[in-house]
Length: 236
Ligand code: CA
Image (tube, rainbow, N blue to C red; front, top):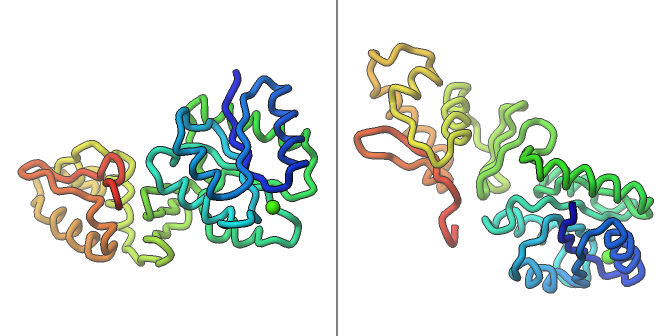
């Protein structure tokens, strides 16, 4: 199956090599030599199926582009493979977890990159989440690492109790769907729903306070329960 691949790379020779190889595999390509060109390319239709993103660009850094693409609802689900050079800030790329799906270190074998392209396209087509290891979940600037039981809002880590964590992930995993207080009691507290539902309200309130502005991602559905937003609000 052919895909549209956006190549964000300022080295002309490399961009041309990638273009040649991707086309030979039946893909359509677009090349952006700068971060700015990349951002305007993704603003056009159709949205690419995959982005190959150089880390060191002449204007905006690759990590910044990556972060922006992962923030925009339009491009959030587009897989990104970072192209980094040896000694460049690979740790930062992974450490900051800007949302890249994979990375290769230059000089890389084009054959290997093509295999990764194939794997990632297959994964995104079968609807598997391209979640990084650890079962990480993201929503706008909210990041939840289910395995490590850690939560960040932007660059700041938020300390949650085990219960608050479960409440957050339960809501997040069903985003866009209303969860009644009874459902939450059963799911999160594993309590029969005859027990007071005020417990839910108290904990949601505390969770929201801890999350700061990200607490607004959890909506109150009057008389029913709570709902994690389906997608980030415009301008958020
Ligand atoms: Ca470069």
